Image 1 (cartoon, helix red, strand yellow):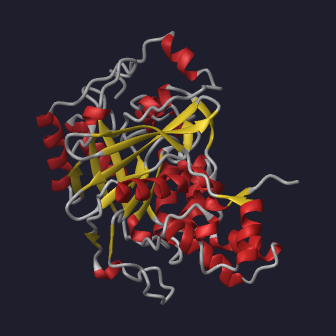
Image 2: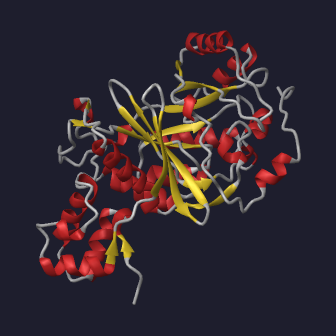
Image 3: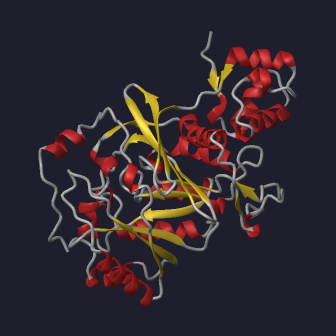
Length: 390
């Protein structure tokens, strides 16, 4: 007998197809989506508007299994981080960031990361495997259940212009929600796990599941150019690009993927993406590294580099970790860099560090990874230094 299908990660179309194979009409898939994703129900016997025979069949042929929480920490500032078991000695991290105007969940897409950016502790752990769609969407499913179970029921308002900006005319997206934004900025490179990321995105956007606006779901990438083009065609959401350098020589050192997809190709793909994106700009993320990429000259190069691309900058204070060999830019240097970009006509923000006391801040997510790439071992054998590359 075939193993039970985990329906937690099935997209609406895939769930409809599964219901057809089980002899059920398409509306049963919509019912299941609402039970699983909106009500957080994992017990088929409690899905009372489904026929009893169908519930019995589901109990035999399907399952709903999110990753199990190994640890659950809450920061002094309210940021919450879960360490989730994804099997075979691997664990991932998921972070919820509460704010007055939004509740943002940061999800992971891989156990580890093969891109190996020099400033990211996840990359220094190496790479084990891609997460499945049910392991990605399971992070949202688990976080909602945990927050509601623990009495965090306050919901944040969602701007009315987001209510039906997907263009499907449904207008059914809730006007308030506990988690209003999802960012694919946790462990891993989402576009190197494209199919599972796409399935999870489709669930997040579906009105019978989570009903999130395309404007409020952000995929962050280090620059996988062919997959940026595919995302543009398949499911365009908000796009953030981990830039971190204004020229190819420096970016080759900081973001090794740049050697395959250099800046000219990456920026051209951003322009193509904006033709269908729900926002009229790309967010460029830029981690501030003392003496590496934070000079006035770097700011001037950066403005020239992106002059054709509608964008905003998000400057990220570096969160040091022992094996990086890098230092955090002084606060005054970060402010000066931001001012130069603003004076150059670009909207620029400095990311406020959240959850650093529980290692939940940007670049700190590490989990536990059974490294198949031996990156961690190689890193331990050398001292990484990019100072002097200008």
